[in-house]
Length: 98
Length: 463
Image (cartoon, rainbow over all chains, first blue to last red; front, side, top):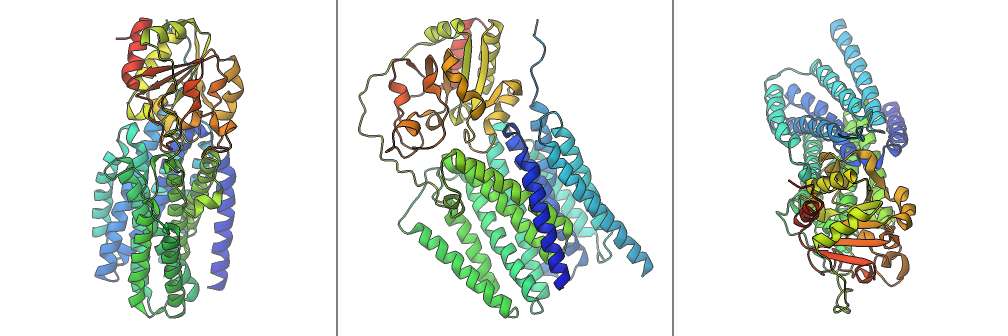
């Protein structure tokens, strides 16, 4: 438990630094799609919810887990979909039109 | 036994690949050229992670998992297909969904594990549930305000911060008690309830102009609550994704609060919506110069360099497509047209960029505040469409102004300023804008979409 905790804290801190360095470089142009993308990635919480449902330890936990999987899945699907739709719209200047 | 252990290795490797793909996904977001690779990387990572999870040896029944995945996808598709003008409320709603998921899992984990919850786990579980429930109701409130289902005016009362902080303090005390006595289940619902209430109370005093900061902050909370869930479940993947999301929201909150000249503590403690709406009343009858669409079109077509300054008003009027026609008509006449985007223009970070990109305006014409501010003295016409406070020179010159010190677009340095506005009512913050009374300013009174359309018609480029 003790070493697990320390490992987990290391991972959290290092991932936070990576996030900070990577996201600092994101152009303000793309801040809206960035937010919808991180939202979709954050919905990785679905893996915890899936295990909770599948283990079926109690009816209570299965019901809450099912709702949680629904919420997270809609974020995964909707988040990636809208991020891609937004990014598709960003176009650079075309060659001069006729 | 060995078979299970093999599965476990496969799962760990899949999670590792997913983590790498998530980081690459964000890295590729750094420029519009590679950003779509970022979405693909994220999608592949997500699929690998879900497939890996389905191999988990503890799973005994797949029925409800399958049903939930299908229902979630059915709900997700329309949420991914909303209008671009609805993106801020959609984003707030998805923060709510994410936080909802985290809160439910945290609650279920508590009741499954109690009374045998190790102290550290109980501590992170409390963080998970408090942050999750607060983000859930807070984001729902924000979405409601953005969708205009709820009143947008900030509601403030005396001692607001004291009430909020007291509530949170009670939640923390209860959480500490549970850390020491994890068997006393009856206290858990109170923690949950306080979190839910705090989320509502936190957003009540928020007005529209504060939304970019608030949405970023909620984004950060959603990420941190997911990371806390990762600690509870001992899932490295979840900790990584949560930390990435948390730092993303944090960075955006800092950028937004700087762009509004708020200190970061001011943002963290939720002291939003404090700008007093009393400053405007004094000077009403000052003369302004107004112009017709015909005159505006003549001035614009005679210009060499035009900078358009869009704001939330453009989004409300859905004027972005007309603005695009204006861009085309002027570009055809050899006028150099660019767009100046203030970081907090609109209702969420990057809101204006998405709307203008949707209208097919090339992104290399969209300029950040720092890039374009030096160019205003050489700009013939600055055309303001639906923006107000971000153009207010009082932020630079008048130390008594509530927005003094806020970085603004230096529109007043352009040779001619044109402002499309419905009437002379002050902007969101209720602050008079001296820009409107300058000799070189022409007020174009009317609806943004209609007026831009009229200018386009005068230029001979309309449909």
